Structure formats: structure tokens, C-alpha cells
Image (tube, rainbow, N blue to C red; front, side, top):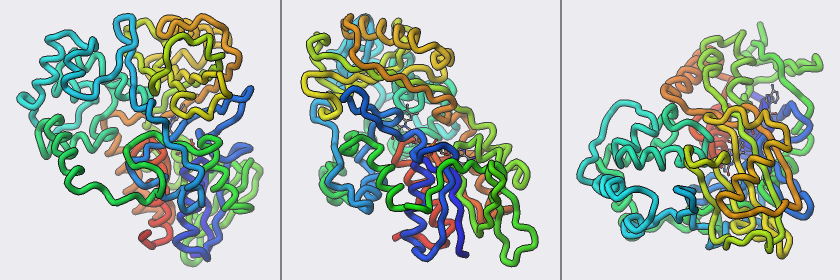
Length: 466
Ligand SMILES: Cc1cc2nc3c(=O)[nH]c(=O)nc-3n(C[C@H](O)[C@H](O)[C@H](O)COP(=O)(O)OP(=O)(O)OC[C@H]3O[C@@H](n4cnc5c(N)ncnc54)[C@H](O)[C@@H]3O)c2cc1C
């Protein structure tokens, strides 16, 4: 095998190409990106002096995937872990921002739930049982911590990751570690306490990621997450082709040793030995529809939701509230349309000029599909109403940037793992030289995407990565 086409130049595609070249430097790899720039959802721009991430604003440094990739790209010195203040998160509830508790005592003192609701949640170790059926995130939280806790927390628990509906999303697909914890300990609170004890006795090895702290904090790069994309694109050089939309994937009929032909929108046909589809699931489904219809059918049923990001810049004097945290999430039913607002310049202080404040509201998702269709002035007005209600901000922002991501985030509904397994099995049987990578497979976060890219590269290269 010599020539591999990677379709899609988001993080999944770029990281796949990077891993392929590490595993088999002799390979001729080409990355085909439909739009004019690589990165997909990962993009950063500087607007009026504010550093603005259009999609993700960082990755969690509690697992090695993105840290290792950063180190391989020579980006260690440009890693920027979130400020200490950003460990505190807030929830908007009953007309105020309430700090999320970090101990049973602070949970009891908090105003997040009624007293019976709190007592029910804290009784989890006594009442919890492990079950073997797949369940929604809402049902799982309700079973462990009670219905009031599920109403308040299940939605925000998933909103920050998938902008989804907790009554539809699969706990097993989205948070497999919680299911494992339940299987081992019955109770999640007991399981988490045991994990903390184990970590105190045997801390994880000083990380693969060098200087960055592996304490699970959000981490970005100097210049925003785009820095990671720029480094990957620089490494790939002419192997990355933008403006190259794949429109069909065919078997290279009759060619000795098999192979595939990738057809581009401009009519060019690329003859390759193997293909990695690193597009969203619906685009992979279109490309596979003719040759591997059962894989295509499974992928086509993975639902996506639309989300919007509204970034605002303010003079510090116009924001009366102390910005002593990461930002807040807003449960539905509290009169706030945004899913949450990140206090970007508290988390990453160099993302706003001195004396200024950068905020980033995320809106839309499964429960508010109309948001992304709003014209700019209405979207901005909705977010400004939210900021006035939650943080008392009435001043006009001095900088505004709105980005919409139609079909932006995949939803891991009930049956998700079977859909993915069906697609992978059909490919393994019918097209072993075609692999999948991307955020719809095993997890939505950047670490999951990098992991999926490494798995796809290993499969195509036929070499496990050490
Ligand atoms: C608003 C928002 C905030 C987020 N925040 C975070 C966060 O803070 N932390 C985190 O870890 N994750 C976050 N995520 C999730 C994360 O950004 C994504 O899961 C990840 O970037 C997806 O990468 P990908 O390469 O799988 O897909 P994409 O980024 O969607 O890339 C797919 C690429 O394929 C290309 N393509 C599609 N069809 C074709 C075709 N036929 N031919 C050629 N190219 C094609 C597309 O143009 C695109 O560039 C966020 C996502 C969004 C939308």
C-alpha cells in the first residue's frame, strides 16, 4: 500500500494524516478538505483585539491524546492551561448564579435543589443499583440522584458537551466511564471516592504532555485552538488540499490488490490504495451510499444539532459582576435562552486586551433548533437579554461576532453504539481499506477526535502505534 486519501480536513482528518506519517513515513498521504481552509469546527480569529474561538475553546488535559499530539508538533511551550479561577463553575437557578458545589457540605449549603432534593441526591450510595440496559442521561441521573437533580443537572451536564436533549441522549454512548463506575461500585459517589483514593496512592505518571498539568483542566494554545490546526497544516504542507470536495467513493474495479477511487467535485479522480473518511457522519454516509449501503444507512441515522456561538467584548467597567470562574450553564425553564456563557477572558486571560472582558454564549441545540435561524440582530438581542438577567450587563458590547454551525454537533442517541458498530463491521467486511475517523464515533471532544484519528491510522497502516 502506498497512497492514502483522507477525506475531511478537520482535526480528525489532519490528525489521521499526522498519525499515518508517523506510523509509515513512506506513505503518500493526501488530505482532501472541501472548504477553503482546514480545521472544520476548530478555528480562531482575532476580532477587535479579542481572541475568539469559533468552535472549541480547548481540550481537557486529563487524558494524553491532544497533549501528546501537541508535543509531537513541538507546541509544548505554547500550551495554555485555564487560569486557577476557572475551576469554579456556576449554574443560573432561581434568579441567580449559584456556584457549583465541590463537596457534600457545600452541596448541602447551596441553593441548587430543595432540601428533600439534596437529601435524595446524597442518599445515592444507599439507593443506587447497577443496571444492564442502555438508558438516557436523564433516566440515569434520576435513578441515581432523584428527579429534581435530573431536572436541574442532566440538561446542563450534556448541554456543555453536545447541546443535546438529556431525555434522548444515551448515557452508555456519551459517558461510558460512568456506566463502568456503576458496574463496579453500584454507587457513583462511592466509585468516585474510590477513584480519588486510588489516585492519591498511585498518581498517574507525569504526563506525556510535558509541562501542562494533568488535572483535567481546559487547555488551549497561545493564539487559541487554531494553533494546533496551523501546526498540523504546516507539517502536511502540499499534502493538504483545500477546495477539494469528495463527491463519490468507488471501488477501483479490477485493480490488482484492490484500491479505491475518490472523485472530487471538479471531476478529478484520485486513484488510491486506502481511504479514511474524516467527515461528519452524514457526509460519510453519502460517500458510502453506493458501495457499502449498510454502513451508509447506519451513519445516516446519526442526528446532528445546530448551534451558534455569540462572542462579545466589553469594557471591564461595564461588567459589574466579579468574573471569578469559568462561566455558567443555564438549565432550561429558568428564562435564559443561551445554553451557557463562558467567561473566556477569566479562563484564558490573554484572550482579551487589558481592561476588557471576553464572553462567549453558546445557544441553539436540540431544545432550541430555531436559534441558528435568527438574524444577527435578534440573536444578539436574545443573548444580551440573557446577560442582563444573569450578570446584570446592560451596556452595549464593543465587539460582537456571531458564528452558526448548522448540523454542528452529533447526537449520541439511544442505539448509537450499535449504529457505529454496524458501520464499522460493514466496512471491515466490504471495504477493509476504508476507515472512519471523527467526532461522531466514540466521543465529541477533541481528545476523542484525536483518538479516533489514531485508531483509523493504525487500521489503515496495519501497525499499532506504540
Ligand atoms: C460550538 C462548538 C464548541 C465546541 N467546544 C468544544 C470544546 O470546548 N472542547 C472540545 O473538546 N470539543 C468541543 N467541540 C467539539 C469539537 O470541536 C468537534 O467535535 C471537533 O472539532 C470535530 O472534528 P472533526 O474533524 O471530527 O469534524 P469537523 O470539524 O466537522 O471536520 C470535518 C471536515 O470535513 C470536511 N468535509 C465534509 N464533507 C467533505 C467532503 N465530501 N469532502 C471533503 N471534505 C469534507 C468539512 O469541511 C470539515 O472541515 C465544540 C464544537 C462546537 C461546534
